[in-house]
Image 1 (cartoon, helix red, strand yellow):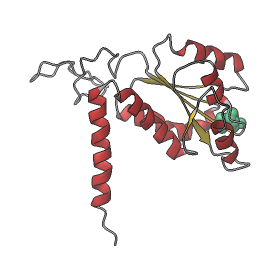
Image 2 (cartoon, helix red, strand yellow):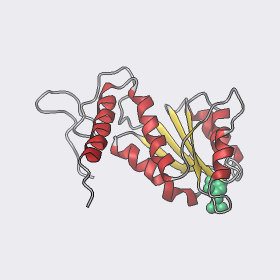
Image 3 (tube, helix red, strand yellow):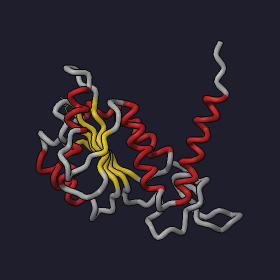
Image 4 (cartoon, helix red, strand yellow):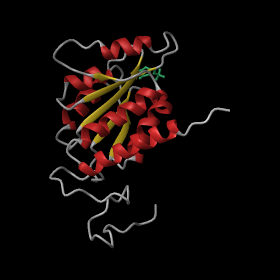
Length: 194
Ligand code: RP5
């Protein structure tokens, strides 16, 4: 990637180096593009990546520092617990967890951290993702998981929801999110059917 100027020539304000058109807010919160990831996208298997890459892309489009990795609640339970327990200390603010079938990953993440956890149920071969949806959404009271739609829509919306949460304390990000909504609205209004 080409090196970009970190300061806006006109205003003299620091630039967001991942989204160069956005000035970095002088917010006490870490800047959106801090080297340390603000959002983690974890998934139970590499087979989930084709869907979860849409969450990755959405966060990238908004210039959010994030990390993506495979962690299984069943196949690597110690790693799952270790990752979630250490997430807050590493500066993460939100965890997006995707899993299919007996989809316990989001719940296990939530059990080990007070950070917001958003679950994305993966479409399964056996039950088309209904199993994943119910396993993710039916958390007992006390340990919340915000559950999104099955598959790609859930992956994109988990990222957008994470952005909405981060935007509460980051005015520039909120403006970016509003511009995104405005653009969607414009496209719908301008849609012409043959
Ligand atoms: C879950 O089991 C994963 O999240 C994935 O959706 C599903 C199937 O995993 P693989 O057998 O494809 O690795 O743990």
